[in-house]
Amino acid sequence: MAPSFDESANTVCVMDASGELGTSLVQRLLQRGYTVHASVQSHGKDRFNQISADPNRLKIFPSDPFDYHSIIHALRGCSGLFYTFEPPQDQPNYDEYIADVEVRAAHNVLEACAQTETIDKVVFTSSATAVVWREDRKSLESDLDERHWSDVNLCRKFKLWYGMSKTLAERTAWALAMDRGVNMVSINGGLLISDDDDDHICIKNPYLRGAAEMYEDGVLVTVDLGILVDTHICVYEDVSSYGRYLCFNHLINTHNDAVQLARSSMPTPPSLPPGFEQGEDVIQQRISNKKFSNLMLNFAG
Image (cartoon, rainbow, N blue to C red):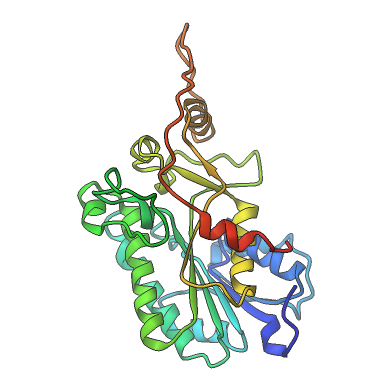
């Protein structure tokens, strides 16, 4: 439940709350008794029309990660920040330029947290793609986990813009947090799977670039929206949480899994050729979420 030892501890900020994760976080935090400052882009405000909440407990702020004063305004009076990057409406796609945008946004937000005295903890949403893209991923003796970082040069070479952007932004956030003494924890989530069965994964989802290689290497992972939301809240409320957490609850490591993922991500599901026999081979898992699993054992959702 929401901490009750002082008034500011019950108030947190969700930035950017324009996307599916941010909106779901706002709803769950309200259910747990928090007062929420939801920082949203103009196109994301419609998501909150169906949320019935006491206006004194849900406050909407404009989101602009390049307007330092608007960030400070949204953070004022908050003890915690849940930060997740949503691409600006005028630059919705991940390309070679988006990394600079995401890095500058992360820098501004962490700097604002350092300047906000009431902020006790920052939960920073990153991605498993900031872990898995390494030249040595096939030769490592141990499974990939939170200790590993993606190789930015490898991402740039193969145009893995999403992984490159997430890696650079998270590294920037960690460098600033350590330099300025900000208590930060990051969550490196797998491919987000919505609770809404009608909301299919888009084949253009930037996470899926390089999906075939991730699948072959045993590191293509997904996470249900509810699990990801609960992980954010658990990490915030657990005083012992630290560092990075690889967050996923499903590994795509069989042909059936891969076909199901492909079908869910395409407007017109592919049909298998006549006489095609689905293989039963299981690809060895090469990525570990042990730290995340241990953290969530005693979480009361």
